[in-house]
Length: 67
Image (cartoon, rainbow, N blue to C red):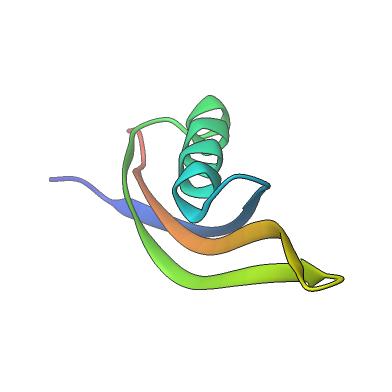
């Protein structure tokens, strides 16, 4: 039997949503043990002077708690 916990994080990239997701999961995996998956809750772009300057994602990361 296992017990999981969900934590919400926000990640940002100047390249793409995919890059923001990968950066966020990579960073979460350094702090959280046993990351099992994530749900992308929201996506947002930041626009300055008519140009996209950042891609942001809010995600819920699921990880298994240790005994």
